[in-house]
Length: 502
Image (cartoon, rainbow, N blue to C red; front, side, top):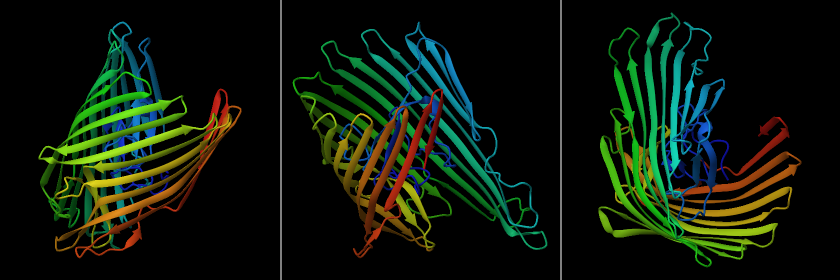
């Protein structure tokens, strides 16, 4: 259900989701962009990753803040007993991590660094004076730090920070037959920056249960700076375009998990989230140009996990969201999940829920059918609030050396927004909806220490956008892919391990 081919370089396509509809977090820091400008490099240092949890859809109120899937990346806890370090060198990056125990083995500080060490975008052997020529340069670096400690009584404190920076520059020269510059000269620079931090404190109560306090902040910013010269001797550009669309999120949340009582494990939470964004472009599309948007919203949820004899599990919950400027209007998101362990080998599960999203990545289509995306605040006034309903039904068969999972889903999305941009600076907003449906099959076979994996996805995404007259037709969405087959093998010849995928 996670598309392996054809996805954008800033997001995943999970069960037919559109760009910006999946929530990716690292230690609960929102990642608005998971990859650098070169989509070969992810923004999280693998040495700082403990595990990754993926929720494709139909998940509970405890996860996500979007209408698509959820990817939760948990950072490593660190070793509090000894000084350790790791380092690696690939054909792209120098990577490393240092772990330092502190305070008499009661805490650990980790520092992870990565840096490109050569320009792998420069594929040319030498400058060619006879043909058009692009000379490019790319640089990437990131920093991940994490501090965590445990206090007397079992209370825990963790502080995580991440920052990644990359920039790409290129010079384009167009030549004519006489080896002279033919009045087309472009100088382009692209910068991007993803930063964020999270402070989390967990209080364990003597009578059972715990409370957690979380403060996070995240910012993603990208700048495109392009200059166009009449010739390579010009001191000032004939035309200059600077475009940016940063987005920021600040979040304060409180959660309390009550002690288990009978079949119940209840909890509740409250959060305040503020998002800000603006769009600036002095040449390109003038949609909300130089206009700042912000929205503060309040979330409250209740959730209960019920269990009967380790065979039947039901999670239910409801989340309510109100805006600071529209207290009289609330968005309710009820969700329920169930799992029945029929036997040690057989189980079945269901999921249903309503999901809202209050930031949106709107698509822009120009006269030449070029597509781009912009972040906007979805307040239900200027930009529609996204709403989705998920329906999930799954079945699993798990004997000792074999796994088989079959999962079907059906998703309905409302509130999609798409701009059509015209040369006369007019823009037309089309509201739309989509339907996603599919079937996922996953199989894993163990042969002693070796593992063979196969997965198959059958899916379809249909969208419908209305024009200003309210008319529209159903079409296949750009990310719709009918079939996808993935295979993988993990061969364990201790101490040598070989992995293959296709």
